[in-house]
Image (cartoon, rainbow, N blue to C red):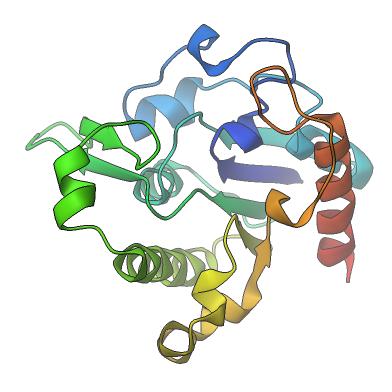
Length: 214
């Protein structure tokens, strides 16, 4: 049996190895990421969780990921029926824009409101509600996609604003099943680059273990 996880740098474990995100290899396409990506640290929550459950760990966290990129990584992955899957959906305001390609999904640009890219987009077109709506669509689709492909699927998100929004929660009942990720913890244990430290990862692994076994 395997634990298969998807997410951003928080799942990959960047910072736990003493290095910041710039020191890690950049995986260009979703398929390349699925085939080649490596965890940043064995202290990342997926490995801690897999050890507690006695499962093989396949950690497909990727630094800088957006929800749409995670979505496509999941579609590229070959699941087994006994897999337990945990998906950490990145910040909804992260985006990937695909190239007009014929050989697969290749990013034209990956943007986030916090990194200074696509300033005009965020200034003129971005709304939080639209980001939450798009993220909810992805979660609903992937939940249906994985329902008959693996044993368990668990979703977590950095924001609980999607599930608290009455319009979205009515349109997307799956949001009631999305757990809260690191932002519920108030520890002082941060890596040098600002990523969550070992205390965060241990606490989150323990909480997800309880959910999986409930």
